[in-house]
Amino acid sequence: MKNQSVPKGAQGKSRTYSSVFTLRIVNFTSHRKLLSTAAAALALSAVALPASATNWWNATPPQTIGSTVLDVRSFGASGNGSTDDTAAIQAAVDALPSSGGTIVVPDGTYMINATKGISLRSHTRLSLSSSTYLKAIPNSSDRYWVVKIWKADNVEIVGGHIIGERYQHRGTYGQWGYCVNVSGSSNVYLHNVSLSDSWGDGILVGGLGWGKDMVPSYKVTLNGVSATGNRRQGMSITPANQVYIVNSSFTSSKGNAPQAGVDIEPQTQGDVSQVRLENTTLSDNAGNGLEVHNRVNGVSLYKVTAENNKGFGVYTGDPTNITIQSSTLSQNWLFGVSISAYTSHVKIFDNTINYNGDAWFYAHGVSIFSKGWAPRDISIADTASYVTQYNNTVSPMK
Image (cartoon, rainbow, N blue to C red; front, side):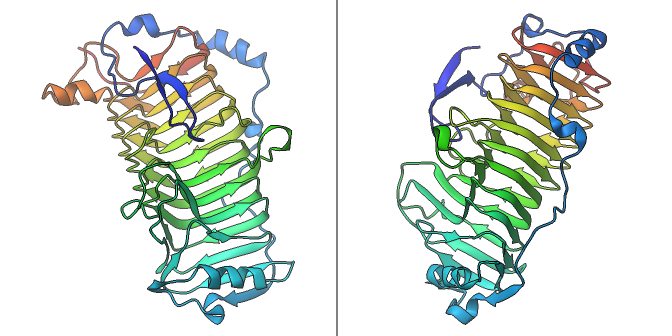
């Protein structure tokens, strides 16, 4: 497959990887390196495994939030869907004591100037009701965020809906509009909230700054988060450690490549380690369900569903220590799993990975549930190493 450079990485810089829009339906065997389970186990024992084996994750992590409770209506927020409520909500946040507290945003549609955004502080909870909408005011900026969490710790966002302005955007350049931007922060907990229609991503979790001064994010949990209809992707992960995504969904990303459900791609800014996706859906994205790039160590998928993505269900290019377990990766337009480039130390087991490679079947009017004549579910590059797979259900062959 021909490689192509795409200036569309998680930080908007150029990266090169195999095109997700070209279906490989012949000569698959030349792209496979399957080690025996015994040999792979010996190899894995010789390297340091990520700390994920110690169960660092917690679906309901404890937060240290201040006791003060403030209602944004007391600071002039109207929630009428037309008034700019940015300053009023920010005034409520700023009025909290140094110990933090909870900002209550009642039912309503609160228009936010996302070129400024709402900046949350340490020990603060942003509490949105189920009928609360924070919606970005249309702008022409190539970069924005409705809510940002920068260099803060113990921050929580719960409930409601945070919405971008992709369909009303007044510019054509850029891809960095976020519903939520978490950078250089620790102990961050988002739950039961929807993130949609951003000019870029539903949420970015990553580092703040560059070089020796770069601060990665640490211990970020998403539980019950829905990111749908975002222009670039549902979620980007750049420099961070211990990111847990559970009971969530990342769907219908479309409009600006990579168009993935989740993209783990720190590039040259730093490293990513220990990411776990559990009981999470990655579906109907115009790109890959999940893509994982270099400078990433320790990604685990457990009970993940990746279906009907127009790229791969899961694509890896150069990370280490990848585990895909008890997951369903089916009906994707390319392979269910593509272990590419110099990816190393991979375990794929107890999964249903079937009826993938659907682009060819759709193009030729053939049922995607037909028996195949060549592998269509798992692709392992010759350059990948220490890959073991067992007890997976794959598509039936003729």
